[in-house]
Length: 88
Image 1 (spheres, rainbow, N blue to C red):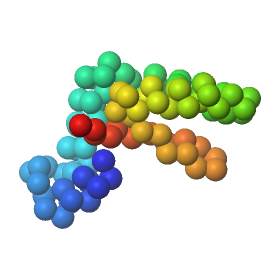
Image 2: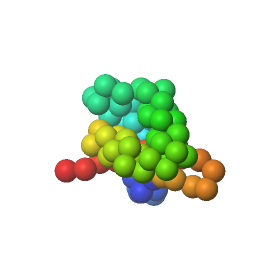
Image 3: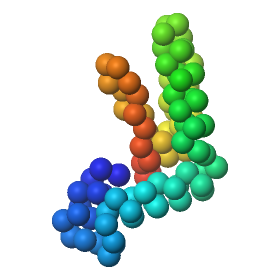
Image 4: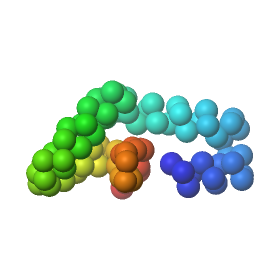
C-alpha cells in the first residue's frame, strides 16, 4: 500500500485524499478475507510467542497463513507491523 499511497499522492488518482482511499481499500480487503485488525493482531501475538519459544515452523506457518489472505508482516527489532498486499 505504501507504493500506491505515494503514486496516488503524486497523481491524485482517486479524486479523494489518498489516506481515505487507502483506508477504504484496506477495509474492503479485510472484509473480503473475513478478517479484522484484532484477529490479525492475535495471529501476530501467537507468532511472536512461537518465535520466542524458538518454534520457527509454527511462526512461519502463521506468517504464511496471513500472507495467503493478503496480509504481509514486517518485522523490526521490537515489533511486527502488518499491511495489505495484492497478489495475482
